[in-house]
Image 1 (cartoon, one colour):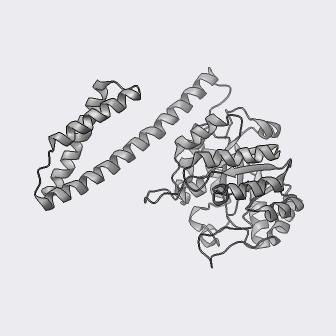
Image 2 (cartoon, rainbow, N blue to C red):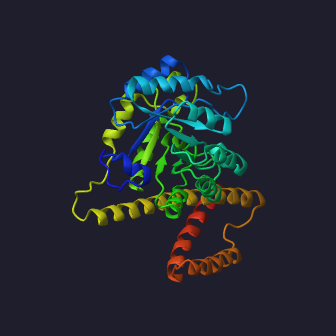
Image 3 (cartoon, helix red, strand yellow):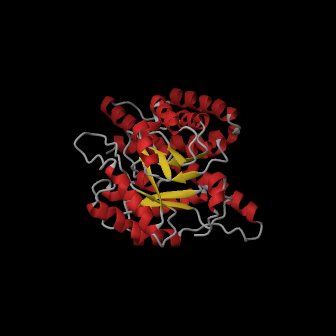
Length: 360
């Protein structure tokens, strides 16, 4: 990979020639496992070795991490390979232990970011640390909570901050474990343009086969780096087995990713244009997803009309929708002509769906 984005803050000091890469197992399982993976990654482009020591699980009885013992294993990783280490912290006690064991980078997980009380506790425990601290987005798509967590840490005096985009939980069944909601990550970048933003494709996808595509989208959107869960035997990992890749696969992913080159003609223009096009691609995908949801609702309406023997076309309802959407479109800078054409097409597709259901 070659990097096209100017590094910022603590990333600037690293003088990398590629996006930042954080990799390692979802969970530290045994000392042997932690060290074996580290040695397999030490001569790659990985900049920080990650391993979950404390694992917040949705339900009790699941593997919740080895605890503080794993911090000694991370110390051995640093001693044997020279790699910098990182782990998740969820409270003041975790922070204290991680700092005592000289962990280089701490991240705050999505379940912690949702609570201002937890974020303040962690911020107070960190104080004016020089360690790098990254904040994952909250579980739910609440930009204010994400921003608030960053602001609490800044106020506490944390010097080296960054953020991790790991996707958002949804009650809907989608191809993602956590839907990316790329527009929220873009808005975060707009609010904190000088804050490094890392993408976590492992938690977004929940599926190792989808990781490359999410990585590529993130880099097209000018993310500064990637956090990819890596295990020498992912199928038998003690947690999140489906989303981890082997070290060999990680190297292949990094080799195949396309990054804009600084030496290209009109590099700044090309970079800005590619970023804007990537944003359009994100919105276009969301449009298709929303239209698909609308048509599923139309199918339900068709089933109800069939049950009650009601005609498909309801002119009064259609005129109400059209009038409201023309006004809404005008408020968003869309011409009446465009809104009419778009909603006529949507309306016709809805009728087609309802007729199909009624005639089935």
